[in-house]
Image (cartoon, rainbow, N blue to C red):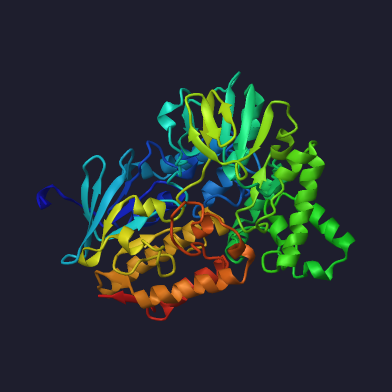
Length: 534
């Protein structure tokens, strides 16, 4: 390697989403920081996911930065649950306000990382040919950033366009007069389909697994509500970090079994109509830990579906029965079930009659060929590990990250991987991830990482790694807390079951953010327990 052509930096940040932007802000004054971003704009999730109806499912006053009080006080969110354009606008405002663009190289994906054990430095290569030597890498690559495309043959035969919701055209798509096929009924599909149905001549929904979905209750942000948040932001941010999901969801202390049927119905109705999008999952203390209590909530939602959807057969097809509510991420919608009352919407059960292939005219199952003008795939992501495995990462002794993770991810605290020193992950595998509000928890993880780097410099170390023993202890912790919940009863991206052939156990830490953050803090306080510094 021509070292004369190599650029020197202290820290390389991968990704200019919300965590990556904060990492730049947090570290730029004391270190030379370079950030590489694959997209041609900042915002991460909210840059890539611009499909119709895309919006956050956490209240925007919470789902926002807390590191700068002037930013908190001056920024105005138009709605309780902000839409993609507002979130992307916010990310751009932050990048401009704090001068972060000077550190970001857009449209320049990181292709490889190679650790030089002699110098304790990473060599970073990018799509545009940048070669950077740095002491530390912070991978803010996103939990859901590598789209999963359907594996069916014949894609090249289809005469019309095929869109993936995570790669939506910036100029938008006009489906007026089109016969549209939509594949995928997870969170993305539930947001996008009602809007597409209003345009399309006909919308055919291909459903493999029905989804639990509750109404968002979205509305314009109430001025008094906004004033109250802005007057109490310091306390609110502290309270968020002390709650299980870093959110204002209310957590009761009574079991579903402690209530009469009438009391349960009232509590469930209040949760259904609340503006805390995930309140149904915690309306009783045991929804996520007791299968019988969970089934009470499941049947309540099925009852709502039967009330909303006029055709009984369609309503039953839309009722989830094979997994507990909350086992997969609960979907938040706006008119999703109501959409099936439209004359131009058809629901197809591809669990019973699977899609076999694309054809020149559309899609075919074993029994039917569906003639379509356009196809939309909302088929999820290679979650958590996909973005890291997309990069050729070589650690100590020439070992590849993709080989180390061949049977599923191994990490310590979700932050580091044994044999890959000085490489930190934000929202990586086996962190709380999407089980905790990601901007505030991302700030905390970046602060923790910055503290580790500061301690390294103070103490005169150049390398920090973890051990396979520590990884095993963390895997045991992750498994222990997941086994106590109903999550284990559902196949989802939480446990890698959404990708055919992907191996791995439970990849999300669901012990709650307060427990997670306390364990991370304790590891540092106890002399970097589980780490090796030199």
